[in-house]
Image (cartoon, rainbow over the protein chains, first blue to last red):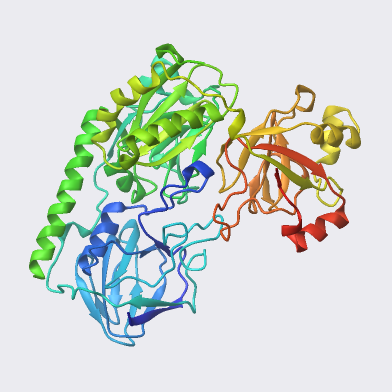
Length: 318
Length: 238
């Protein structure tokens, strides 16, 4: 199949990487998933350009790269709002745009959220490594040469099998982290905390520390959460909250290791991980406990919701 | 050996996974793999990933609603689970290690803390075998044990920002080899020229849970000879 064209990075961003849903099936040998920070935005970004089979996107932080379209291409954005412009016109997330050869995509200001997804119709031409196109930055493989995108990189785009609908608008393409409640389930070691600690977890106002990255968000805790619990290393997940001995916490994010040796006190539900992912540093939030059954219901509802959105979209393109 | 209900706990971990914690001391990590194999055999179509660790097995599933339905199925599978003999499955590997000054960055610290000379320590390290208990931390990083009590050391006060790939290290009663360059807090005793993680291989990590590993001392000259031609070193013992 002939390629549809290419894009070029004309100015490096802070951390722009090729991502897909992740490298699943290798956690037993220590290979992490390295998926996306916001799975919903990733889904919407793909749908916008008619990529029914999800394709790798560029996950961008701010300051973001400047990108030139070398050919006529359809693209879409979802996730945060970084005040995107195509040449001199402001463009918005949730719509499909038709860029012409030579058009320049820039992001001017971080208005909300921490991550934005850029999709292209047909998807980027990226080789799969261990079943996935996603980037493992730490060990330097997958994605684009196992690293973040830099000035001078040229990414080829595959031909699309569907012509996307560029008149549609998907309202929920923006992730707005307005809620200040992060819903969690009890983690396997929660019961090892004192009654006072357990209670305080749900009264406390937490903030995210600036020393955070895509491996883990450091959550500012308190002396009251200090502990001396020791445990053997065991499996961890995205959204697992590990309690450090000093009373601070690590919320594990998309690039987390496969195992950890700190007590897993809470597990953020999948739907709220992305809320935390986009959360601003200075703003406080609280944890709220929900049952496994409730968490499963929320997640199943979201799967159904996505299926319906995808069906509705496909109808508009016949 | 047969499992009883009090030997394990079955804990839902999140919307797509559950955790089996073993309360009994499993003398060999391949016991966990036997449990894994049985679960995978019965529920193959819904399991996407698993993580064996020291006393636990994490299982990842393809859909949320499966977590509650599979819990009771796995519970009945585990109750009265009969472990088979483990001896036949073990793969033995020899890994060449240079304990020379060029690579053994924590030699002085280790000698001081253990109050032994380097030759005694390295001899002790090469005279025994280690079992791979789990992989984690980095792709291909194997947690191996157990070291003799008299070689037990704490981790470094503050971790190194950069540890070179191939560095062989010890901490507590464990030993491990850094597959790629990374920060690290273990005591560095030497370096191997053999790759622990290589995407060119069908099986990208050299070590797997249950492997038996022996360190073989090599000189610095031999280190570079093997590094330039790694295929000449046969890691697997027939």
